[in-house]
Image 1 (cartoon, rainbow, N blue to C red):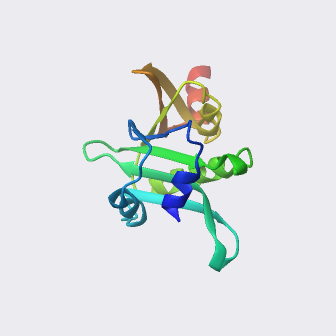
Image 2: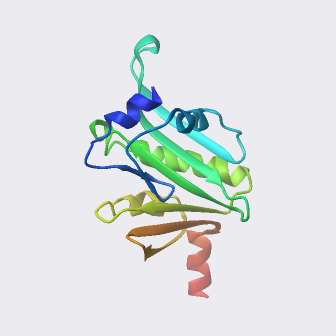
Image 3: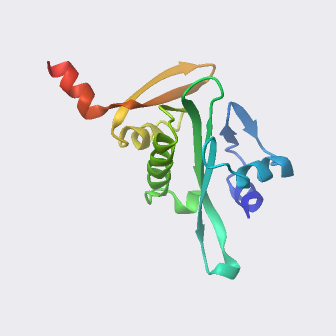
Length: 156
């Protein structure tokens, strides 16, 4: 089902994740998505249809860094199901899981033209910053800096 999901995404928009462009989804990558360890790697899927006819319409995932208390996060929603809050729900839920696992920062890489994704991260309620590097925006969400706390610091 995961492979079918990835191949169902528009062909002119490569699935850009973990600083690589993927147009082919090897079996080993699919296995890695479904074999999670609940602390360092987490994958969520959104599915529609009855149990025997389900299909995946969204995937969200994070992989924790080995050297730092951060993680890289990514997600994709099939265009037929876009703008329904699915990505926002997935990122919120992944954030909750990450914080409980001791992760203090998410990083995401967004290609130009997809800037509306910034809003999904800003609605999490944490400080978000970004930079442009090598043709991508790098977004960082700081779980140890809630927006309300940052506003209080600025006001004092």
